[in-house]
Image (cartoon, rainbow, N blue to C red; front, top):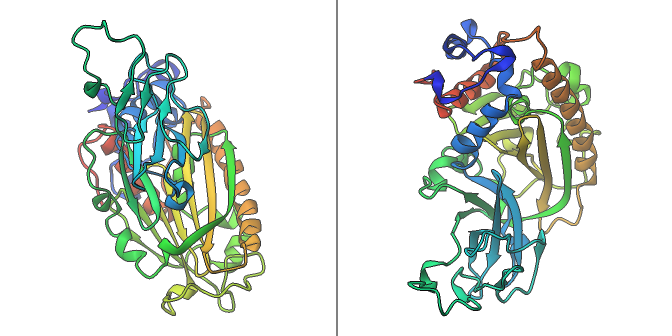
Amino acid sequence: MAAAVRTRPRGGAIPASAYRAVDRPLREASTLPGPLFSDPAVYEQEVKRLFRTSWQCLGREDEIAEPGSFRTVEVAGSGVLVVRNRLGELKAFHNVCRHRGTRLVEEAEGKNLTRLLCPYHAWTYDLDGRLLGTPHMREAKRFDRSEFGLHPVALQTWRGFVFVNLSPRPEPLEKTLGGLIARTANYPLEALRRTHRVVYEIAANWKLVVQNANECYHCPGVHPQLVKITPYRSGEEDLRAGPVFGGWMDFVDGVRAATLSGTTVRAPFPGLSAEDRRRVYYYVLYPVNFLSLFPDYVTFDWFIPLGPERTRLIFDVYVHRDEPDAAEDAMEFWEMTNRQDWHICEMAHLGSKTAAYFQGRYSSEEDVVHLVDQYYLKRMGLTGRRRR
């Protein structure tokens, strides 16, 4: 099994026994080998096995609202163009001309597209990806325009969020989301509007960022403000099988919002139970998204690996579209908390590369991190099974 990822960290390949040590029960298990966080060969396999075969949420439908509006993103090293066609349907394509592979659209987003024109040799496509114009191709033998439309990318929407998947045969998005669909049923996700977006550059491997999102063992030391409102040992992890991992934490008595003050002028979302109004829910949509549900706002993260040692993170804050308050208090809280997280992730990344570190051991507070790591090894073909 270990041959699926060929690495020679610090002079030798990672032995299969190191992966088997992760796959033991929590009390006996070792953590992921340090070289997995910085080896380029490992990252190359992650792109193929994980990022090009997983659903990734790139934003909201209302960000591409009118016919002719578009957005371009990078997904697993490939450019993707999402555009709304003349009929108002969302379409996704590889952002590459079928002639000689030129990037079709350079702008990150825009409106009023009526066609797609390659800037190199003027091959032209409609917003459904059909090839319309091909200058000076009349003499080409056996050339059929209908065979040279843009390569489609799988696209599905869920309650206002837009997901893409580079796999030619992805599993349905609903199957991937699994129990998250029922967990979010009380929240008005279709009615959200974005009030804040922050883009972070993190000098750490993406797996460290995902691990950090799946445990609060670090919270007493790293997030003193957070543990004052949500005790780090409260709550329960209710989605554990993957690819969605997470659960909830409880507010302390007297706190009703994840803000520095523990209060807010915003009312809770309509339709929430009394239980939901006293909880915050955190769910990783493995490998690269993180959805957090609060009584009065929602946050969504998109982890974008830029290589084995760097991660870009897009962090969005949403409120109900009828809510006039822009959640500045929430953004203030998470700007502080996020920067605390990214700093400690960068410290962990530096330590993972040292000659002194290879594998550690899991705490009882890292149960879900252990499950996530086992899931990772299984998806990478490094272990044959995953314990729950």
